[in-house]
Length: 107
Picture 1 (cartoon, rainbow, N blue to C red):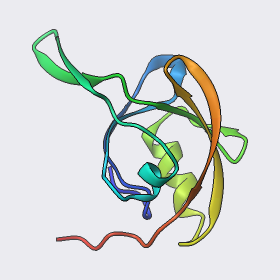
Picture 2: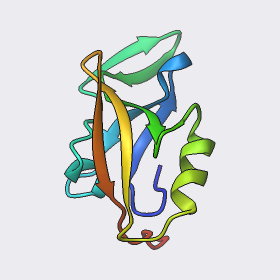
Picture 3: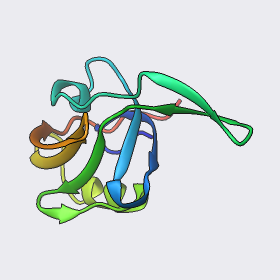
């Protein structure tokens, strides 16, 4: 997923854990904030899934429960805005700050 300079290449919702980062582009605002993508793949009923990435649970103090909510929250901001995020990493919550970048151009 590419949302207003945040750059999660792939992500999905994990029940009440927010939006899990399956992969994060090197050098992206998410990577610079310390958000980590998944490191293992597992086969779940016929589909290969990446697991182990950080889960984004809140942005600027507001819960994030879907990719749509995360995308909408990012879209309401502009490049160079700094935004506090709450993520679950290694099973523990932590707060990070991400500085949004320019929206990637479509190819």
